[in-house]
Image (cartoon, rainbow, N blue to C red):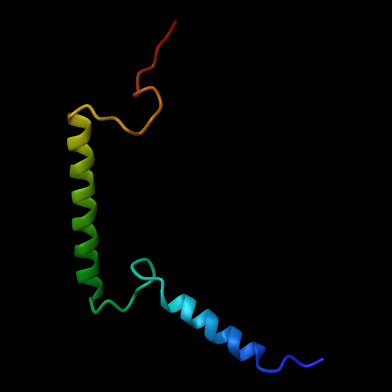
Length: 72
């Protein structure tokens, strides 16, 4: 039994799926590695600042017992 053009169709489907990854899979964003490192470092700093501000405000949304260890 022959497969006909099923293989070619599957390759096209796979390519279209991998081409639409968006933010997570785009290596060709036009940035040099140094620019990419700077962008990522800035995003991490903003994330850490947001988390610190949230912790300072007392909004612990991480779940658990709030970090308190109750000894009996």
